[in-house]
Amino acid sequence: MKMNTTTAQPLLLPADWRDFLALTKPRVMTLVVFTGLCGMLAAPVGIDPVLGFTAILCIALGAGAAGALNQWYESDIDAVMKRTAGRPLPAGRMDRQSALHFGVGLAAFSVILMGLAVNVLAAAILTVSILFYVLVYTVWLKRRTPQNIVIGGAAGAFPPLIGWAAATGDVATLPVLLFTLVFLWTPPHFWALALFMKSDYAAAGVPMLPVVAGERATRVQIGLYTIPMAAVAIAPWALGLTGAIYGVVAVATTLIFGALALQVSLRSTAMGDTMKPEKRLFAWSILYLFILFGALVVDRWVG
Amino acid sequence: MQNEDEIRARQRSRARVMALLLGAFVILVFAISIVKIKAGMPH
Image 1 (cartoon, rainbow over the protein chains, first blue to last red):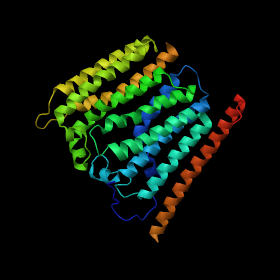
Image 2 (image 1 turned 180 degrees about the horizontal axis):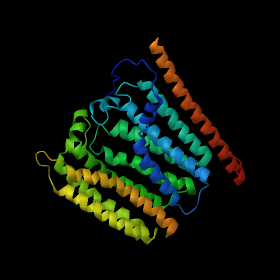
Image 3 (image 1 turned 90 degrees about the horizontal axis):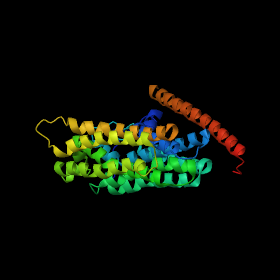
Image 4 (image 1 turned 30 degrees about the vertical axis):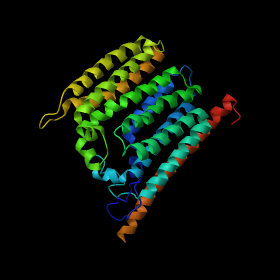
């Protein structure tokens, strides 16, 4: 294990509560909460609002715990990347032990609350997702293989499954398709980011695909992963699991995604390139997931 | 001792946030209990 203490200066003050909040990666959490909520609302049976709220809270806290443990383990690489150097640990605003205790405590709390208040299946999937993100992705794969985010993407794909399991106590084809959708969406999403953040990852020694295999290979991979992703995005409608509202929205937004991904996979970087198409694909990929999951819920409640 | 004042102020703000979170948790557990009792679930 490559680990060292990266505290910039000796600590004088106890960490501010806002730094604990920052440890949970609140911006990543919004997408996690949203997909979890949509998985829950797309389920055929309703859930009591209080229990539904509790389930979403547990998903959010579990994701926050995973984020905190990720930052605890990665403070050495965060310190050398511009994008992450200002985080509480690399900036020296918090000691590593506080982050570890916070992460483990929050993880245990979220799982126990989910198990007691909602159901055991949802708690079990939540546990798997936290362990997957922290152990499989952060500790095992991220520094070892350029396929890191492909498999790590599974960790981010769990929320709709947990939301569904919270409402129904069961798992069905539709939430598994949603899981697969987020799983296959992650590579083009992250590699688009990696293309314009290449130097950052290279400096930190993280084997992101553009660093290890080069830009050409990354662009090809973005294009290749988009194909099964598009198929899975349309599948819920094609299989008759959703209505026409979802179908129309899925086809339209996936076409845009496909066009942007095609543009990225066919071009190559020129001198002084501003990487506009890559940034556009990255931005659209986030919006795409929001729209798709939103359409799923609208379809279920209106259609 | 300006440093000590700063530490105390930081502790106070953390304690205040913790108190709010604990209060919210108590309300949540109460609400969950009511829902469970209404649904007739033994736990």
